[in-house]
Image 1 (cartoon, one colour):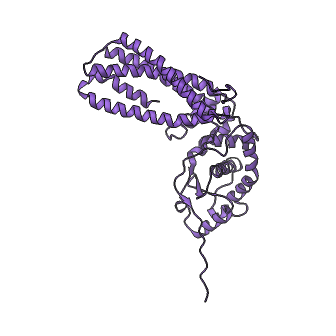
Image 2 (cartoon, one colour):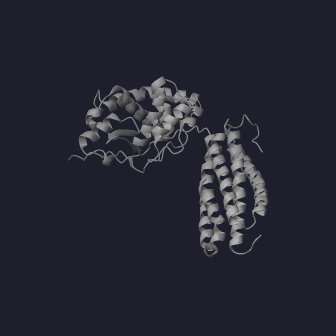
Length: 367
């Protein structure tokens, strides 16, 4: 049931994730049995959040037998969507666990573990269903308890995963801590600090950060505040024409960033990153390091933003920050690799399809 060579053949977070996933799989199967039984009673035969919603809809079908077809169809579609989402995310987790490039075996063992948890879940579900019988209130009460346990196990399984790739929030945590202390934080420290929904605008990240500071002091509060602020202001993959309105600014940007695969413009308080057509994940990572240093200049040095062309001149924020990034990025990348971060693999963001392509026209022939 475990990959060959365990524990050396997988990452350290593999076992905890597998145990929590097994428990949530058992809970899911129990709810599945209860939902199926309710569907059968509804037609008179008798005896991740989306999945639970689908099961919940099936649980209430006995109360609305005339809507059996509609409820069953919607619930079935919800379960199918949850399966697709789970399959897409789980493959990324398995790839992270396979430290010896043994992804195939890790996936195979994971599916085997899933079958075992389903077996026990179905047995427990049948036993519970026999006890409940046709009582819809009792079925709903049981479903609610099992659903709560299922969601808790699901949450714990995701929290146990130590992601080694860098999305904008994790990258900003790493870079901010590096700029403040000169040290690249450990993978577990960064993963433990990342909120579940960092990109949702209605989540009060500052309040969350304050609570987290009391619970864990592994990373500085300044780094967490910077990561939250940068994530809110970041626009990765912006359209050049939306922020540059004259030739002088355009020429200044192209000249300053002539050796880079990205350009950065601060517009209305947002950090806008324009990507070239051949921009790689590492180039995007470098642009995020650049933005973190720009934020540091803004926060701790107090250099005020000016026009784009002035920013690109010697002494301007863009020129100062780019000079620093070109000297320092190779060092933080090396330190990150030594700490286990994957700086060249995976996507760190979902950029918009707005890439710039440099075209050079041939001079007109002279007579």
